[in-house]
Image (cartoon, rainbow, N blue to C red; front, top):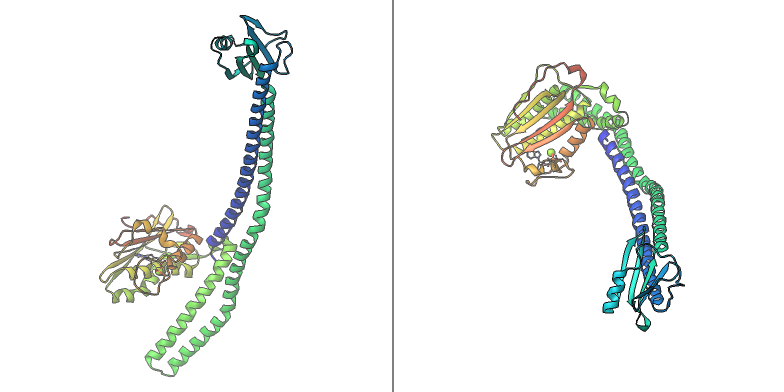
Length: 421
Ligand SMILES: Nc1ncnc2c1ncn2[C@@H]1O[C@H](COP(=O)(O)OP(=O)(O)OP(=O)(O)O)[C@@H](O)[C@H]1O
Ligand SMILES: [Mg+2]
C-alpha cells in the first residue's frame, strides 16, 4: 500500500498499454509489408515476363519503320544498318552487340541505364541471316513500380496511425480490468484494515484492563508478565493496521509524509535494545554508532521501525555465535545512512539484488521463513524516497545500507562518516 506500489501499478498499466499498442502496430506493419512485398514481387515478375516476350516477338517479326510503342528495332544485313525512320534514343543501337552477334551468332540480352531510364536490349540472329537488335524502354513499367511503392508507403503510414489508435482502444479495453483488479485489491486492504481497527482497539483495552487487574489481584509474576506481553502484542497489531491505513493515505497524498518527522537514531537504538537479549543469548556483540543529536527523516515511525527490525532480525539469524553486528548511523551527501553490518555467513554478490525479491530465500534450515522481509523493507524505504543496498561475500558477512532523504530540520548537522565502506 505504499507510494511505490501505486507508482509500480501505474507503471505496469502504462507498460501493458504501450506493449499492446506496439504489438498491434507491429502486426499491422508486418502485414502491410508482407502483402505489399508479394504484390510488388508479382508485379515486377509479370512486367519482366511481358517485356521479354514482347522483345522476342518484335525481334522475330517487327519492322524498324513501324515498331510498337517504347520499342526500337535495328537490322544489320550484309553490313548495312536499317534503323527505321523514327528518331532513336541517343546511344542506340549498341554496335558492339550487333557486331558480336553478327560474328558469333550468339544471342545477347542485357539491361542498361541510359537517358534517365532503363532499357532492355535483345540482340540476336533474325530470319534470313539478318542480325536484329530490339530495344525496349521500361520507363512506364518503372513508373508503375514507383506508384505501387508510393501506395504501399501510404498504406503503411495509414496502417501505423490506425494501429496506434486501435492499440490505444484495445489497450484501454484490456488493461482496464487489470487496473480495476489492482484498485480492488488496494480497497480490500484499506477496508479490511479499517474494519480490524475497532476489534483490535477493544482487545487492547481489555488486555490492559486485565493486566491492571492482575497487578491488583496479586497474581503470580509469570501471569502478570503474560498479560503485559499480550497487551503489548495487541498494541503492535494495532500499529501494523494503522500503518497500512497511513501508508494507503500517504500513497494518495504523498505530501502528508513531509509533516511527519522521525528520529532515525532513536528508532535504531530502540530496535537494537529489543534485539539485545537474543544477541546476548548467542554471544553476539551488538553495537550502535550514531551522531550526537537527532537524525531526522520524514516518514512513518512504525514503518521505519519495522524496516530496521527486519535488518537486525536477519543479521542475528545469519550471524554465528560469537559474531558481531554493528549498526552505523551517519549523514552523507544530504542523506541519512543507516548500515547494519554483520560478520555472518554473507551471500554471493550476484544474489545482492535478488534478495529483495518477494519470496526469495537463501539456502537454510527448515525455519519458518518466507523471503518477504527484505521485499517489504524495500517497499517501505522507496515509499520514503530512499534506497536500500546489500553488499556481501560468502563467509565474510553482510552489510545492508538504507539511505533516506534528510529532513530539513537536521540539514545543518555536520556530515559524520559511517566508517569504512
Ligand atoms: N544478514 C544477512 N546475511 C546473509 N544473508 C542474508 C542476510 N539477510 C538476508 N539474507 C538473505 O536474504 C534472504 C531474504 O531475506 P528476507 O528477509 O527477505 O527473507 P527471510 O529472512 O528468509 O524470511 P522472512 O523475512 O520473510 O521471514 C534470506 O533468505 C537470506 O538468504
Ligand atoms: Mg527476514
